[in-house]
Length: 459
Image (cartoon, rainbow, N blue to C red; front, side, top):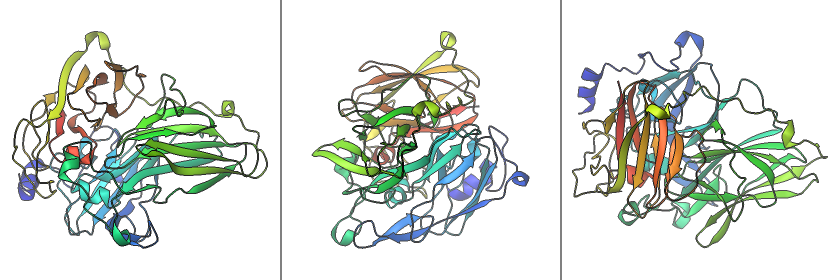
């Protein structure tokens, strides 16, 4: 299906509105203007050319919304390439999800698309393109999105952290953003690791104060294994949602694993004395890497973690497990040399991966859904990883509860991205309450763009 055919047949226009979960009224909110554009920025000593951001010389901004209040954004594309903006983790109307051909037409140069919705859930989310995804994300277009709670939990510092790599070579300029070898395995890792587009930044926080550390893995590939030695803290949310079941604070022996697309909110009490520090490390091949440092400043605030107001649960429908239908999805190698369909959103030129033995040939493909779910019914999705590689499996438009794994103990907390380890099978439960065609894919972008993609339909 080409762009003109989509326009003629879909009935979804950029400024139009389909009723559904969280749709905003244009009369209720003033639009935020966002411009996708080329950028340059000094990630190292020399500015890197050919980056993509919402500013010519700065990272994509942290967007702050409020739970239950309308949000309207007019997103304009000034790039030569087509694009579309996806709001990762938000439960919103399908027409606002930003997936080319599935929910909207791709945005060409000079096009503007109006995204409008009312977020029902508070928490930590993020945004990124879903057309020419590999190139635009790898060049910088990943930003943190926060939906603030109606009641302030009481932190002294709220610190969003955008974790991501860059593929830079001589003169701090981009080298190949992906490789065939990487795409067929665990993905192609970057050469420069950053937090908020900075290497090993230091952030000041009140001594004895309370910090909300919002960790967002926006990298195209890297799986983070994080810990903060010596920190007094708690994990309070995953993928935006307050915990139902406690999760141990990360240690060197049991780090917090965050795959591409996943988020974790930590509540941390700063050391009491000025100048003392806490360091966030990533445990990776070759040893520990410093991601950022928190430095205590000023007199002891004498705050305690018990002073924080508990995060209110988000309004998610509880699964009816006794009457759930089980649907199995197998993630593995491509069964053969599948056709590649570039459309307007590009492909990597080859197919390596599949879901249920079918490789998704490209963003412009017109194949049917992996499954059609009855609206309002509970389902258990059996996610079976038959490969020796990790796959963070992301489902748009809904949240789900992990139930069990055949390899490890897992906590049953609401998430939108399940980190499948190699050869792991995991059951997750959801209620199919949000109508639409919802993308379902691995968030290692090289896997997504080489076949490990599909969609679920809720009529």
